[in-house]
Length: 226
Image (cartoon, rainbow, N blue to C red; front, side, top):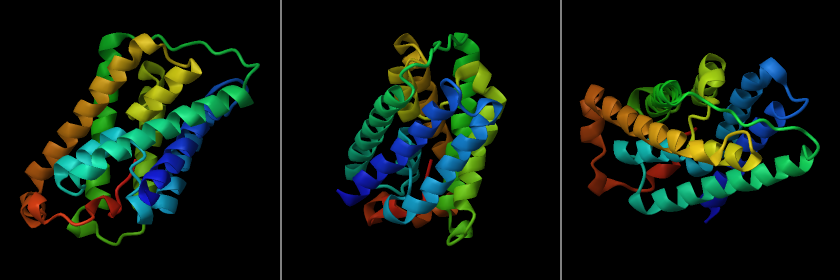
């Protein structure tokens, strides 16, 4: 239970930062910097406890890569979504007087943007936080946070820059995105995470052979994030 609560906390502060920097008198054009930084510091804070996923698409990718036990997948995703929803209600309380205009993305470009940058995010996670060649590094949190920052600056105006089904749920609760659009995030983000896991295992056959699913221990607690 401890690691699930840690996933909730990390996702909570990520989504809280998203809402507070975007709604009303927020951080303006610097919002992606704040959001990427929030993810980075929460990864460094919680990575030793949970792996610091804070993102159901990351959990899916890490599981498919063979570094997360099946029994942890559902609870991780559940607590991530719960953390996002709680953060959304806190943002609504803090920013109660602010006008919120829902994003109306074009479906095709939004699907492509979310897929590409979720793929990039999960691919970076798997390479810097689960691979033998980068084991024990001190930069994994920064690499992952900067991947989100890059994506938010690049395609935030196209899709909203969620790259995370929990964030997508949170912004829907806040009113930043219409609930009718949530399928865009869920489909593109989960497919992007799965594709990244496939690319990682295809490019790193020795990693696949070194971690057979039958020999998993408590692999979710490796340095994995997002």
